Image (cartoon, rainbow, N blue to C red):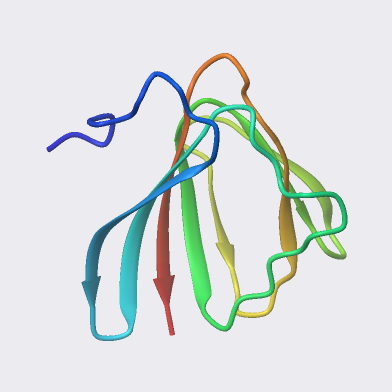
Length: 103
């Protein structure tokens, strides 16, 4: 398997694939192409999230911290209930995220 496998040419919605799951942890591949959170929407999750940008580019907004630009290789730890949103992702190429959710 390769993190770039199975990405369709057309991506009208963000694509989320479960790569692995176990006791208290799950690993997802998220693929965006010009996608962003709806205006006024914030993620407020019950789990910690470690996220790394594999390809593309993105800007996250983290409540109390502002906008954080991300390039390939950049990663963040978003503690449970850290409100955040996706401001924008690259519209020309896939932005591939590797997200690890854990308690």
